[in-house]
Length: 427
Ligand SMILES: *[C@@H]1O[C@H](CO)[C@@H](O)[C@H](O)[C@H]1NC(C)=O
Ligand SMILES: *[C@@H]1O[C@H](CO)[C@@H](O)[C@H](O)[C@H]1NC(C)=O
Image 1: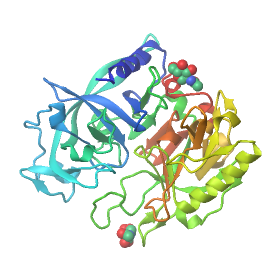
Image 2: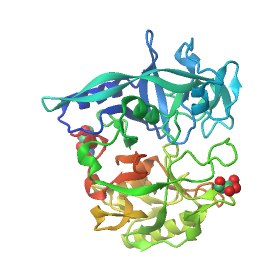
Image 3: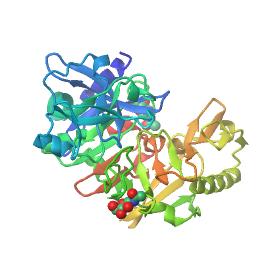
Image 4: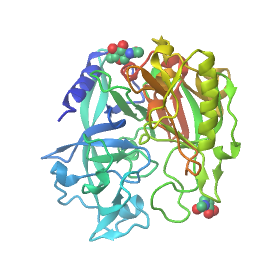
């Protein structure tokens, strides 16, 4: 499997460097598939024999699932029975699939829902232990992760290195929910999505919280509930299981961009609006009205900085000649800074509104040796969600979802300068 070396280097990083950890002690590696811009993890499922699976990380799915047959996974006696209290807790009002509780497999790209049985089995993860100031990794087992088996249908669009997804959505069957309830750790998880696939550059998901020195440096904003489901199938009255935040404005080099502020709220009549984070979208997707004004202001500021526009490269609408952009070692290409101003005051910003600061490293996508593009895409005039913060904008940041305090935290810009996911591992 191509991912072997990545996993090895991940283990190496964790065992070779000093690391302070108190509230975060469970962890899984994250690898980026550069061609698809997807982020995946890996763990063992089952015992004697166990099967190694590679699964894309999804903050939106209602279920974890993988192509059991393709992995040679034997489902024998791991079914969650229909009409059992557990089935009712995991899948309220679900259908029965034979004698098993029913679950659905899907990706945003499969244009279909694939019904299957719900199973539960052991999965492996890593625990950090501190010995002589060295962080050591040992394997621990989560006794029951609920998932369903899929055939090839929903695999459409997924990284070819993977054969399924693992969900970190706001659902009781999600991996983080199962970890918190089993290991009695805080209901939080933090993602460091890596920007590169190169060796030693891997990301991580921390369960139970973030490493100590980082959790003090997160800028936080309240998580909000979207009252209208964003899933492909749902029952009336279901809220969304995704992670939404309240954005107040967007500034480029300090200049606020103008668009209807109603796009930032939920329109419960139409069931649209708001801002969410998504690991399944490689780049931030904006409602057309926001996209157009963002591009206009960005281009004006960029032109003043003597950046030269060149023909755009799909899916981007705004590209520049790389020669006209100075590269800053710490923050990437020196381009106008994009600030997403969010609800909540931050002590790290002298009690001003929390902001998600996006430097060139997270805003610009290198499409060739000579061209780089603004890594935001136009979501059309009728998107379900007005702002979808995508993978590129989260990379090499720590993004923490804290369900204890109902907050999303993102690495403050000061800490982020010249850092990457390896840095977050304590190097
Ligand atoms: C959105 O949710 C609210 C509250 O549950 C509900 O009244 C409304 O009908 C929903 N809108 C749509 C379009 O489903
Ligand atoms: C990112 O991590 C790699 C691997 O550890 C390191 O070589 C590189 O210098 C780091 N880059 C930055 C900008 O910190």
